[in-house]
Amino acid sequence: MKRIAVAVIGAGHLGRVHARLLASLPQAELIAVVDPDPQAREEIQKLLPVVTYAHLDQLPRLPVAAVVASPTHTHYQVAQTLLRHGVHLLVEKPLASTVEQAAALVELARSRGCVLAVGHVERFNPAVEAAQEFLQSAWAIWGTRAGTFTGRCLDTDVVLDLMIHDLDLVLAHLDPNPQVLQAQGMELTGCGTDVACAWLTTPEGCQITLTASRVAPEPQRCLHIWSTQGYCHIDLGKRVCQVVRPGPKWEQLHGRIGPLNSREQKLLARHFYPQVLRAQVLDFSRSNPLLEELKDFLRAVRTSEPVRVSGQQGLQALQLAQQVQEKIRLHTLATSAQVEETTLPLWSFAPQWSKRQAG
Image 1 (spheres, helix red, strand yellow):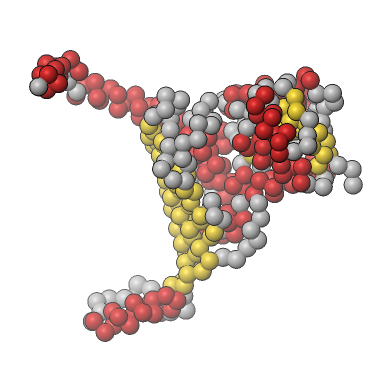
Image 2: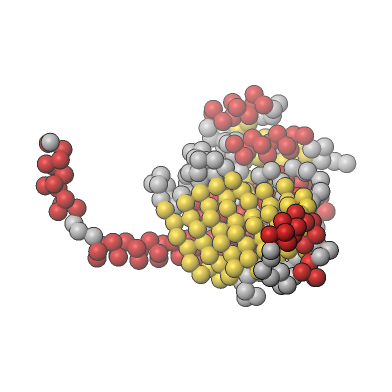
């Protein structure tokens, strides 16, 4: 089997991971890594025996396929250049900085007959795949995605950096047309919203709450799902899926547990699990989501079959993220107006503050 010549554009944290995984795949030939930062190129060369370049126009030959893992604000220009030369692309999320740019890339890929995949890697998380029946029958979801401050991805906000993963899961598993009811956010770094919360609903009435932070004291990625099938908790980081379903006594006792005496309380508490409800940790393959994403992309390049996350789906996730951003903007404006109306001018506190400082 002839290997597919692949280049990685961007040698930051994620670019290095992509390069390492591609170098391990027998169906791929990693021919180049491109990054303008000499230190980033040096780090790659310490890890892998691959030639690095500062710019795309230095490549001695074009790859058949490429992974774009450069900063978000560069996605459009880099992807546009490669697509015009007929290079198949996997672009890390978000597909572009704006909906307009993403739509242009989708159309360009279509017109050039190129595969355009988007790196919404949670679609390949085995814990998510194991929870399909709960996601598709959910009536309430609470998602938390928190990361510690890394200093990376500061060319975008937390909605496009982190929350977009969960927005994509909503689109993929629940409904293509959820409504953003409200969203709030807080900026701490001066580089856009760093903490955000969004409330959504689907036409069928599923209520969704998503929170995201890139300044959390410790990382956390989880989904709580209440559905007609039971309750499901997914730890996306550890790739663990725990479910609670009706037990053998569910039909007999459901809605019929009234006031209990002391003995009955102890007896029922002792046998509630697993008789009324039963908890189970689902067993599934512990695959590497990023590796599976790369395999899916290379398969699509080789066979011309659809990728799991297409450019069009990446565009839809970006459109939903933009709606969240707009709700945050409107809420911030409304809150600022209320503060201006109700708060005393800052100078009114100056005399008292000066006296306390002097004392």
